Length: 388
Image (cartoon, rainbow, N blue to C red):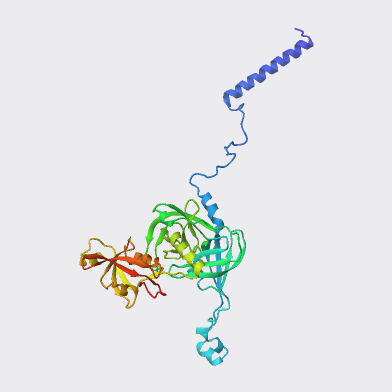
């Protein structure tokens, strides 16, 4: 059969089309995904604008407080051995050379800590032990500036000190009332641990009113498990609002590192001390001239007390305010100006808060009777031990 050229071309096209369709059908049977369209990039969801405060984040509090936290670097002059003048004597070197070979120090000793800016005028609150032995103090601000500082005043009894840098318009911290803290509240510790730079750690309030630790004369510590390490001393303990609730002061540690037990001086006490140092250069405290000890269960039973609280007056200083008011050894101090005396430590704090030359009412137990005695408060001298 003879076909014209157009018919031949049409027949060839039809056969080719049929063959292609058959091939596609076979490929679809054996490779179902052959004709599926694949995306070359994985699609993920991205928020267009982050929320101002993420759930569970404390960045707002940290951002508010961190500019007010400073790093403190101190140094003192190198020590010179009293035997240095004999060092050139060959006889001295012969007998004592090994012992005194490295005694003179040619390098200044240095240490570091943290502090909190408490006013725009350059006042910085820190621990006394951070700057106690310093000949030079340098403060590193959060904006990178480094400034020399001078000591305004110190209070070794609470381990607090105030220093000052000569500049103004600094970012100052906001104080919160530490009296409103409760066990379980979230807190953040900000400081310069081990000199690595400003660092924020998070924890909770583990306990309140910790005392009898042998750290300071006046102890009323906030205990926290927020990591506090060497270099954090003098830094801030803040709440979730970014406000100051304590000054980080000490840790319990076996190797020098954090073990989850840190102690901070309450902001309420720190503020009282700070304001007196700035206005007077020192802290004035009340004093009545007694020695006291805690009431134990045995003492409570011996004195026929219905509770284990108060402070047993073991001694009275002759001529002191308590002696002049008629307080006797063996009396049990129950309250001061209506505030309960839990133990000898709380007694110290309550009396210290009283103003000298002002009368105060002390409630005591004597021979199974409770009586009130009026005492004119004196000014606390430099303490040698836990007497009052």
